[in-house]
Length: 163
Image (cartoon, rainbow, N blue to C red; front, top):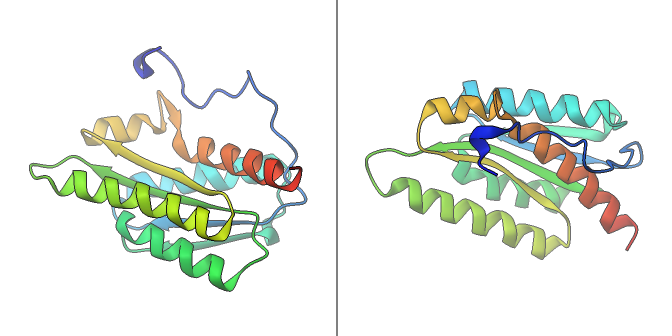
């Protein structure tokens, strides 16, 4: 189904475990702060609403989406007790191929950090054609990718703990 037709942050079809026993890191890009701030607020609220204790959430900013990988790497190297790290960013298409290079590097980097540490590192990065699409996915008509990233982090932390 096209994202134009639904709220992507609807979790009525799935069971979300209680997050009370888990610790999370949130790395958020400062670039496109209006969007990433909304993603962060959504992720934080969703974690708290699903039982995660505030003292079990570490939130850190990085300059841009490209730095999310390094931020997650540094955080996991210093805080091995985290159950998952959520990476939040927003890359909006411009007139050059820069968009493609950044999106590819961030996706690959986040995947590699998760593999290196055997921890869920969640890709909560919007890669949109324009600002309107980003707004629609950061608390607008299509939901909030931050909410989705937080639910994914809880589910993957629970998966990891129970495997």
